[in-house]
Image (cartoon, rainbow, N blue to C red):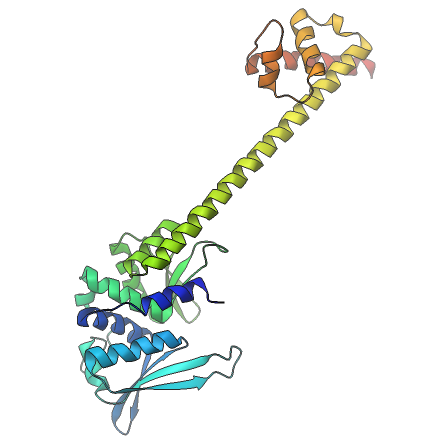
Length: 312
């Protein structure tokens, strides 16, 4: 069964993009999932993923926008999860590609995302889409706490991702993780906004539908729990009141109480399950407010406590 994150990524791989957006998306995927090696003095670029749709996306973007000859290699993982690993390999003009994507200068791989991408809203959207495809995950809103994250091996890159998120008002935060760093979002509304930013509109609608239904269920449960707690308090208070009234009745008789206290005592005995507010409306000389009823029952309870003390 496909995960929610898997559905999001599948949708993203089906988006049609122009050259500039394709460059930004590829820049993110290659920076995060790419590795460079030298074979016979030639630079070889390998881009690895366990997602077949993402592998096809990388291959298509390279072919359509860069006319780069690449090959797709499929390997079988032998440890723990035995998923396929897909490697898109660029054997020709790999160095030129890395320079054009501003991942590498003449000699070194650059630490930060290109300013052209950072300073452009549209390119930032595409870069975040690529970053999510390469190292992103989002919890299923139906079963888990709300959480979306993007993993980076490099701290500077991770901070740039957080800066991008912040530029869209997404309240991204950074935290170190084992062997790397993550940029993450916790708020449900901001996660929905992120999905819209990267173009996963169908996933966003599904996320919002699930979130609204879940929040409604939680609200109903809170109301039911609150009402249950209030009912328990009402029953407990009524039981104590009745026990004190019966003590007075059995020891000295209710006639020993002042008229107003006799009145509420009898109404309580006749209506053991109703709330204090409802009881006040049943008092013959009333109605009596809730605070007024509380005042009278405090006197009854005090009278009963004195009777108990005198009998010890």
